[in-house]
Image (cartoon, rainbow, N blue to C red):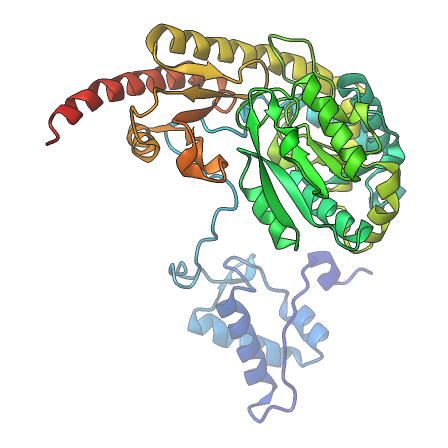
Length: 483
């Protein structure tokens, strides 16, 4: 017959010092006190019965009963009829005892959130995701829950190979794809692969402006990070020298929003083949385009020189931690060596659910819905700027989830403007942190028009435009009062 301990289902680890001069009872009391004080036994935790606990510890039941009664008397435990013995409520820990962890991403804000980098999380297709999850849990074999290929679930890699070829023009096979936990994880793998592939990997170039965290992360791996300027045609390829690799956002440069021109694309591939360097293509929002035909992935031009990275962060949600890295054949051996010490961080269940999402066309339908929604938002922003901010210019709006609002040069200071907007509950980003030399950046705001929920978007745009108009009216009056 199943015993009471296994029916109750709680394992309780206590370090009971046998042979203590104070005896077993005192040792058990001390072990339970330590467990409660340290938080290993939180408030409300139900303890096993005295019989079960005595059997597990190998002591007399009377010893256990006396120890529990003593801790009830001291207030560490509480005993109620028909509910057993539980850990008594404890005072909340002070700030010094339980410090809050620092945010590793942008923290939530009050008011209007127009920061870039997020899709509309309220639009996440919960019902379709739930249906795909239910299908996986009903049909996946037991073996699917075991240790899987460290490159990722084959079901997902097969679905990605078909999807990327059809939607982004990527030339690949499932054997060239590795599933990653976000772009940063993919970039770390790239750095490790370059270290393994070459005895002197040198440096990795980044666009200028660009997301500043990634060059810093590359330098932490022991590689140097260079910055290459961007103009209206994208990365200035002639500035590249003998770097091991260059990270680019060719479909929709982040944050400026320009597209790498055809001439620059050809020049970039020529540079890679001439120098033996590699191109890391960050295709972070390539599915979203509005006023132009889709721009295919650069990888399709040179599968032997381009490492393609895509993520679910913009098309679904960053919290999924799903990304994919497509490698040239020549780097696969290095990949297998690197991943010996780097298991996939992505849940197998999530991988199988996303594979199902791709296979059934649910992702295509979701992207089409979002494309329509985001284009409507972009148009509303464009109309508001054109009608009410005549001296401002919106750029980078042909695709993606954000736009750059350029303001009159010298009309304000970026930090002062951002503080002014934040004081009115409007949260946007300035463009200067994306530049290697922030002081040389133009006065511009990076506006994420996908971030707010639908019901809040028009109010956010209206508040932004009103605040910018008020700010521009106040500045000339403030200047005239200066000596």
